[in-house]
Length: 154
Image 1 (cartoon, rainbow, N blue to C red):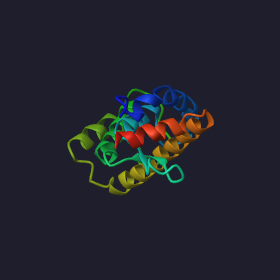
Image 2: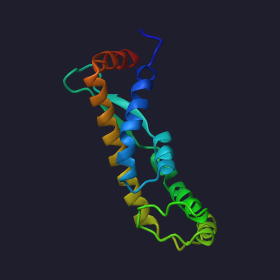
Image 3: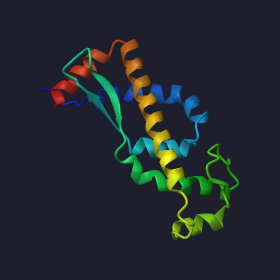
Image 4: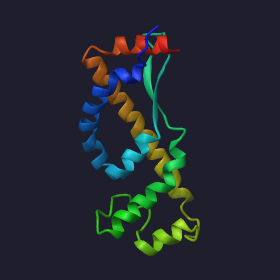
């Protein structure tokens, strides 16, 4: 049994994929700060690591739901500082006042649909990232070794 977990073995690959994926994030509804928060809440797993034909990296986004409300705070903060307005379009930014109202729960509670859209978009984007990561590992001849390490970790 290995002392190194499979996730420890792909740190360099993740850094490379992060750089390559940054253009995909720029074209998404999320700012780079929001994406960082989403990635912090996402865990990557390998499904079926014992089966070379079925094994694949998947994004476990169970904890993303907990950070979705904070995405609006990041966006509001960027707007209040004169930063990029973002491309979300799902909610108009009223700046500091809306941010304060939202923090106090006085924003009318109409973000349910927006939060659901954000959650779905985050899940889709993190899985695209996972697919890109696996593709990168395969291209560089490292996937099989990582998959075997994940199987040992179980």
